[in-house]
Length: 128
Image (cartoon, rainbow, N blue to C red; front, side, top):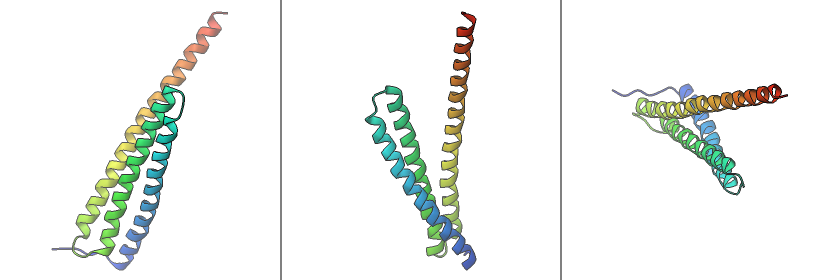
């Protein structure tokens, strides 16, 4: 038994796929550019942060493009709408899982920098 979405649904999927494709390609390009620019940076921390960030951008872009492809297949093919929808959702889940963990790590790093700054300020003011 197969299921086909309605024309209205297909318009929604087409619009979503087009937006995901554009943003996904932009993320890939920005990720590659960020990694390249990081490699010409002088500081090792800037290089590491830039390359890691660039790779994250590119991976997220690829996952967006994969989701876009699956959403577009819903519109362009018949008989596999549910399978294509589930593949699109799996790509989106992977993308958001990566973003979630990147957010957790970034938040922890910001917390550590703030803590280090506070401790440094306290030690400077206590030494006077």
